[in-house]
Length: 335
Ligand code: NAD
Ligand code: UFG
Image (tube, rainbow, N blue to C red; front, side, top):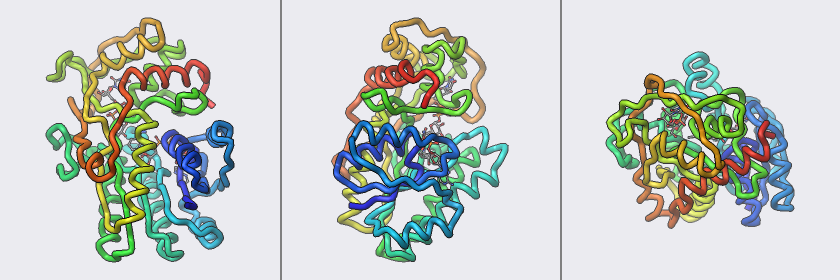
């Protein structure tokens, strides 16, 4: 199949592009490189020994976007492109709504105009806000607590309306839990700009000596060790979930919501401990107050994806830390 991947140079997009190439698909990779480098896709081609057609285009540039659809005959679109920093979304809400919501509107308008009706969208467990009881199931109420999360809810609603209005659409809304890890080659991985917002890349930078210590946001939660619990999912498992969802869309229409998580929670201290074993060194940390907006515990009920897609996460926290460390150790400055 010929697949358009938006946000292909990013963390999850690059790992999924790699699997698409290995599965024999033709990939057109679109990215404006706002939060990534072309080097990730160069390495994907090095690993797979297959070539990608890369287009440096912004989703907000509807003219260029439409030109790609006019030229290529896509079977489906995997849509990763988006801004994802929660803190930044409070400071620049309009940029987030413009990029994530208006960018997606441009994309689906071009798709409809050119008769492409199969779409996989990167949603997030953030859509559950603080409201859900764990494990989170897909019909838990949606309640985002930040502008970034609201862009995900709005896009989910827009795509749901689109599919209800036109039965030709097949749409997968994939709600990722906490992606971590890297391709086992160590050649591609997560390359955050500036100080990482997320736990695992922060711990990795401490392990490699770029930061003095991990700041643990709260040790007074009602959890076994007092620190926050999350469902960390290996980025390769996540990428495989996209291949499974794409397969499902080929034979069915409608809009589907699937959690992509492991169903198991790990605390902040467990992550630090496991990473320190992978890196073979002590990782210094200090306990600080809770971070505003954090929930105590979040993990998926992944049974719908297992039942509908035949997919489940296979890799554990140990492998996630080992693979993340291999990438970080061999690429201390990222790409
Ligand atoms: P990332 O920033 O590494 O990748 C996103 C890519 O999209 C980047 O390469 C960026 O340059 C590109 N991009 C952004 N806006 C664009 C635009 N207007 N036009 C063209 N390209 C654009 O992030 P990621 O971690 O790979 O996340 C991929 C998707 O998954 C995002 O939509 C994100 O919101 C979602 N998600 C991520 C996480 C996570 O923790 N990583 C969790 C849940 C959901
Ligand atoms: N944490 C720390 N120190 C840090 C970073 C995080 O203690 O430096 C803690 C947090 O308090 C939380 C856990 O580690 O308990 C995980 O935090 P992350 O920031 O890595 O992940 P979140 O679950 O808060 O949020 C992430 C993404 C969101 C996404 C959500 C669900 O940032 O965009 O996962 O997919 F929506």
